[in-house]
Amino acid sequence: MSTLTRDGATTRRPAADTSRRAFIHGGASLAAASVFSTHAGAAEGPRARVVVVGGGFGGATAARHLKRWAPALDVTLIERDATFISCPLSNLVLAGNAQIADLTFGYQSLERLGIRVIRGEVMAIDASTRTVRLASGDRLAYDRAIVSPGVEFDLAGIPGLQAPAARAAMPVAWKAGPETLRLRQHLEAMPDGGAFVMHIPQAPYRCPPGPYERACQIADYFKREKPRSKVIVLDANPDVVSKKALFMAAWNGPYKGMVEYRPNCELADVDGPAKTVKLVFDDVPGDVINVIPPQRAGAVADRSGLVTANRRWCGIDWLTMESVAVKGVHVLGDATLSASIMPKSATMANQHAKLAAAAIIDLLAERPVEPDPTLINTCYSFVDGVRAGHVASVHAYEAAERTMSVVKGSGGLSREANATEGAHAWGWARNIWGEALG
Amino acid sequence: MTVISHRIPRHSRRVGLLLVAICFVAGQAAADDVSRARGLAANCTTCHGSDGRSVGEVPPSLAGRDRAELLQTLLDYRAGQRASMIMEQHARGYSEAQLALIAGWFSRLPAGVALAAPRADGSSTGARQP
Image (cartoon, rainbow over all chains, first blue to last red; front, side):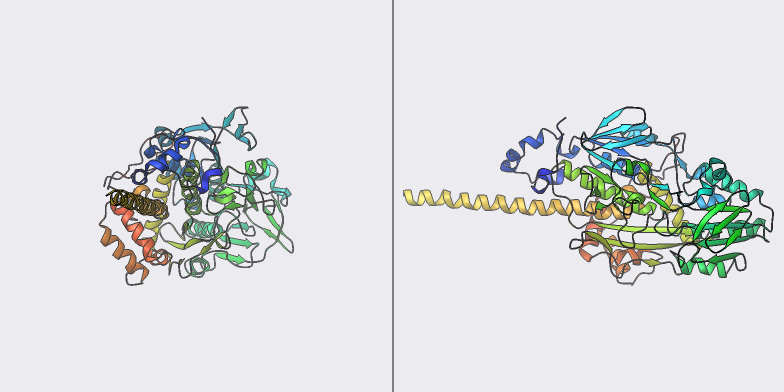
């Protein structure tokens, strides 16, 4: 297969859509003859190889939309885990308000769509040879690659959390899975009258409202099962990072006297045997300890030369999601250097994925990409087992700044958490899971 | 007369070329609209389901709905004339022209079976029929 480059991207070429094909004329077709050799029928889209690294909300959604929008593409998805476990709603598992099985899905539908799903660990992407190198030693050639690696925990400043035994005693549970269940077990084993102590890292981190939702969920569980217990929230940030009004209403309402919130808490370390969070100016003991570490782009991004900002995040071109450092490699989701007020959320990763899929199809067909893309965010947080509230925003491309900005007047917060929005949240979840894996 | 007989074909050739050019430009504009509509509609499907087919009752499916009704609903949200939990906040992020593209896109998609993520063992989680 011939390797397509981006060189012709600024010239108009025949399009993949049948609606476009209707307007192709003789001259244009002749001029594009060399391109046609790389195309299946126009409706099938360009023929090329796209390799997607990471099967979460970004990667799986990108792979599925690439294949659905351009069926002639040869799409491979490489994922480390056998199943997909949703981080959104996983705080409900901690409270017994949802089961982990409700949030666990398979990749079978993607295979039925014709996407090759490989379970494996990617060592790095080698842009000079356009290959993805797996830990197994296999190499996969690509015309365009997508990296959607999620986040990696940065434990350098938390020595007490580095040993496996410490991690088992203090599960982070910021990636849904076995640690979610272990943290739930610790909460169940905790005697009534105990304290759950959580530390939140400085923003940006995955899921800005997530820690505060977690505080609500655990308070909900305590209120039901262990009413003399406390939730202590130690926040490295100067204030609640997201949905402050919603969470304060819960902490000052149904959980009054149960949740204690302390801002500006700089973490020094954590002492597992003493069950103590060590702050710079204070030690806070508890019964169940949950330190959420600072985060950076998943390790494969760093190994592939994609990290460009603060040694943490990957700078990208917002028209294509292509890395600013490595041509032909697109980065999605939490690993990206976020634009202003753009959260590291599942919705945003889903939106990145579809923007990238459309742009990659255009680039491979040597067509100009959409010059004016729009992305939205919608994040729901549950304050108990039933009631949820949202934060929403619409982000539009700013050509002058080459970034995404929130559209003035758009977006906002729920007036109050309620059961209607709780139903919306489950509806959102079922549909965003379907977008990735359906 | 040779002068006339040359003139007419030359003229009609010019007209023909002009028509081809107009068709190409108009066609490209229409194609850009299709591409743009799909991109904008992809903003909505996160919550409303791929191809506008929702797995659950809420948020509602959008595929196959009447274009004018969809557009009016979106414009009412945008103008703050229709109460909602979240849609007013989203609709205010788009121009009327963008909302028209979105309404047009979903109205042309056929209603169909919503596609849900399968359980870990590959079994269906019960995708909803239209």
